[in-house]
Structures are given as C-alpha cells and as structure tokens.
Image (cartoon, rainbow, N blue to C red):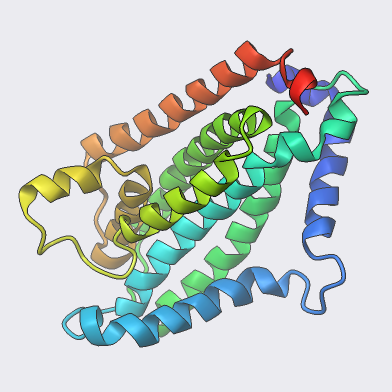
Length: 255
C-alpha cells in the first residue's frame, strides 16, 4: 500500500492540495474556519451545558473542548471519507490509481485542520490553568490510533456509499447518536456499571477519555486502555482494507 503511494507521490500531493483548497475556496477567513468553527460550537455548548454539568467540575471548558476536538475530527474525517470514492470517480474510472489514495488525501487535509485546532486547545488549557506535564507527549498515541481508526471507518463507508446511497442518511443519524453517547458535555460517573460497559465499547469515547486523563488528571492511562485503542484502530483498518480489496473491481460498475 505504502509502496504504491510512494510511486504515486505526485498525484497524492496534488489531491491533498486540491482538497485543502476546495474546502476553503471563496471564503474570507479561509483556514481560520478550522479554528473558529469548533470555538463557536464550544461557546454554545459551554453556555447551554455548564449550568447543568459544569457547576461541580473543575476545568469544565477544557473537559468540553477535549470531547469536541476529538469528535469533530472523527465526524469530519468519516463524512469526507464516505464521499471520496464517488467524488473522484471521474479520475479512477479513467486512470488506474490506488483508490485508497483519495481517502488518504482527505484524511491528511482533515488532520491538518485537527492540528490547527489542537494548537488552539493548548492555548485554552493554559488559559484554564491546566498544568502541562511531560505526559502530554502521550497524546501522540491516541492521535495515531484515531487516525488509523478514521481511515478504516472511512474505507468501509466509502465502499458502502458506492453501492448504497442511503449510507449518507444512516451515517448522519449514527453520528448524532454517537455524539450523545460519547460523554462530550457530561460525565459518566453517575451511570450504573452496566452502562459503563456500553461506554467502554464506544471507540470515540475511549479516545476522548484517554485525552482527558492525560490533560486533566495528569496520569497515563492503563495498558488495557492502550491495547483497546490499538484494537479498535487495527480492527477498523483491516475491515476497511478488506472492503477495498474485495470490491476493488466492482466499484467501476456502480459509480
């Protein structure tokens, strides 16, 4: 896979540039929207939910930002990935190129947006008097596993979208349910143990919880947490790779 990407390096770079320019075409703020959009969402959710969930919680703004930062990355990556094959059908139906390259280019563009927002997040941590420790280096781990997980889910969705356009509507509903089930603006401490099990099966929540533990508690999560995140990422990526390999030739007949 990576050898093919290396051979198609020029095309891959041009796809990344195209996706990046396309996202901000004819906008006044341009890349500024990558930072302004999550900040506006953070402001709205802080005003709405702080009175209910933030009264007894220290660093509630940072707690909320952790959840929004991670979920928005997942949402943008999978939504963009879902349409990447269909949107680039005019290219791969005429030129024999690795089809996963379109998904990878979308994820690189989304990753750049995430990196910009992450810088703003660190500024908010400083304003919120969060203590910075060497453990912040460990944030590289959930970022790596989340990227792999996003790629896997994106491959599955983009393959399904070629055959079933209904996936677009189903995924929008699934994202809404996933957002409310990822404890972005509330804590899970008051839920019974059997509900905690449900949260533990949510990959997005587990990544959010990892980041919160590093940032807000200053502790490194357990080995079980590391293995769980890796398991989610590898399972999703393998499922996506299987879809692309199995249906590679059939994509041409349905676009």
